Image (cartoon, rainbow, N blue to C red; front, side, top):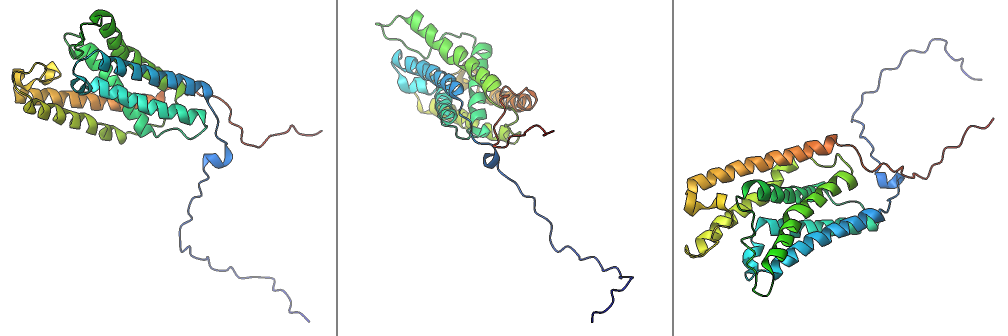
Length: 262
């Protein structure tokens, strides 16, 4: 015999929740397989080669390679060549892209190179490229100048606008990107103190010439440049979040929807 089921079952008290439910995240690689981008890899390989060619020409036509490498334009081109080469390899082998903190830094520094050269230098002639007598100074210095300060920065911007998905940069990285310009400023000032005052080219940039303008005026110029560079970094981050997505391929997820039967 079984007991009859009561008609009125009293309401049970609610069980208190002892812990919050943790969200479950599924990585995109578990659903969407990586996609090879051979055209992007080839274009980025060309960009890396362009930057490396400009740096190589600058070192070949100068009689002071260490002084030439001390310039921001040379260092930013070297960084861009390395970063773009790694990005080309990842695009070719269908690996995840490089961190936007690294690619954004390379883009910012090469953009600074172009803006400083075209807007702030009163004489854009490459005074740091002391050419040898056997090399034509007009042809090679002009070619090197255009590669370092115009062609490579424009190609880097086009790579960012046409080959890179948007929304990957973060505003908190803008302050981190300012560390390298700050360290570079200290390097310039220390380098000038270690060089004989009568040495030509003691200060690599006229707006940072403490001997001509005084340290107070030079530090004011450096502060103004630092604020401008930070504003440029914030602008790049903002543009990265509002620009359209140039990569509009439909990724294959492994699931195929069939039309209804009947």
